[in-house]
Length: 451
Image 1 (cartoon, rainbow, N blue to C red):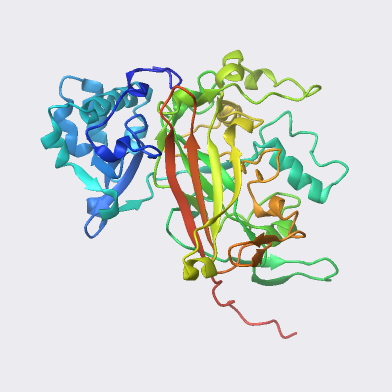
Image 2: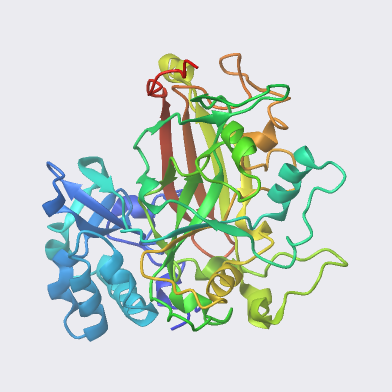
């Protein structure tokens, strides 16, 4: 079944016997059913289980396998959910995922007779620890927002902000997979080389221009085959789901190192993802046409073009970035929203990203993570990074609630992302939160060179 196909699980009339799933504004109504990896009690590795979010609860999917009899695909998927990561489940492909989703939807619907057995498999989110949901084998970060690319390019090249290859090829780089961490884990300010204008040589020390990037992360489920490119039309067969993603960036380190080979230590120190994975099928109601290209833009090359992708290759997901400073936390002030952007504005679709990634014969494996790159819009307040919001730090933001200013992040700051899908005629769904607090840099190792 195509991940874009609507079925009974998307019915806006569905209600769950779990009351919190029916509350207006709930991130996890029965129409969502996002996956996570959780533990209850001590949280030791042996207790990690795969679950789905429903209201303010988590359903242990593997514990429900005996209720899957009669549907072999759903049963296989439920058994795979007894692992300590989502990888075994992800690689089963769309038919098994769809079968499991439909069976879970039936079990959680109001009026179901198996409530007693299911209740034993429920854990309140408040009593569970959420873990990295996927064993990530590879991490590729794209640059799919033309608005972000233009805003950043304008800071460096006012007369020619967009490089000539941008509208022909989905730009990306291979990131550091083992630096990916789950929401809630702190991020330590990185050390690195920086060079200010006028300095004769670089210095080594803590980054002073630490930034966030609002992104959406895509998880590969069913693997592709080495030496066999995936077409744009087939790309969604390989997509398991999506998470919020914050690709932290040290802008001062980046500006010194990025030429000629691109980002390295300015990006590899940390990437934060949310613990919830919203499946491709759950997002079917929120598929939209790909963003319109400006008059005169080149047509995509054949390996990047699909009529179906132009018609339904985009995703309508609003992404919010909020900041809570240490002073806000001490004074009990709520986080301040800094921006709201939408993935519907991305120049390159996720289908094109997958297709281009494999176009040279590169294989994608279960658990590979693809970042969208910073999601920014055209209007004020839709910029997905402080670099854009403060125009390279030249126009600091004033935080009205405390009177503070920010050009870039300071120690003790907490950055919080949230995501929401809304469309008339369908129940809105959310992505939970992706949050992390900045810790001070460690002491600088080594001794100064004497001679």
